[in-house]
Length: 104
Image 1 (tube, rainbow, N blue to C red):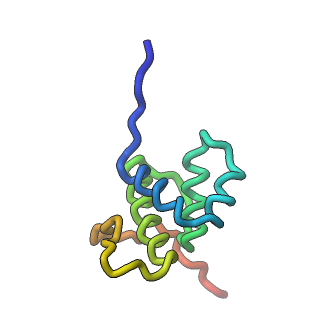
Image 2 (tube, rainbow, N blue to C red; image 1 turned 135 degrees about the vertical axis):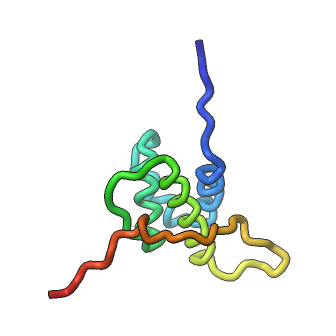
């Protein structure tokens, strides 16, 4: 019996946003299609978001939302009549970012 696997809305929105970033598309094309977590890490790195460790599915969706917002910032100024495509919730994202290295 066949079954359908549905993707979270955050992943769908991230996929749409990536279409506006050809350089990122080229980076992602180097990774196997089935390695989603690796691709998400590549997107995070492109967005200057440092990640380390293992994440729950909920944390991955939050990371995708943060990446969408950063990609929109990187895209630059959008026309005045165009609303942002995603709203980032007011949450503490610090647990998704790796602490900066301390200099000795």
